[in-house]
Image (cartoon, rainbow, N blue to C red; front, side, top):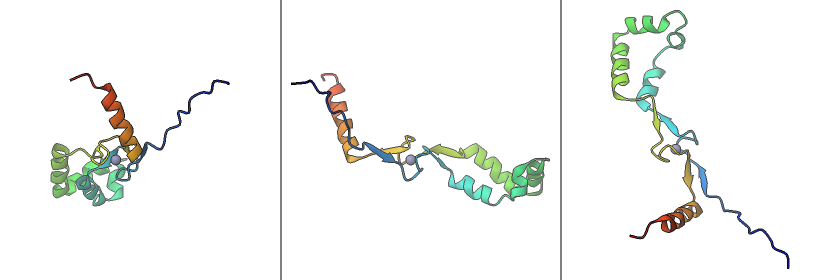
Length: 106
Ligand SMILES: [Zn+2]
């Protein structure tokens, strides 16, 4: 009888997060709304267009300053906690197994 290597094949343990498409980060909806109202020409800022835009639009300047203070443009995806993937049922069972056998005696 010959020795065979054990079959260590695992089932699919995780799938990409559909909320962030595996990117781990999501964009702030407030920032997306803000940028959607900024003309593309101001956004390039090759020759100071951005500063000119803010000077001519005090409301945009105010909102920009408020967003800078209050909210990052991107933050870790709340659905996958910034991991980019979600464990499958098999993945959850493996995690429970690892947790159980890595705990110190209470
Ligand atoms: Zn995610």
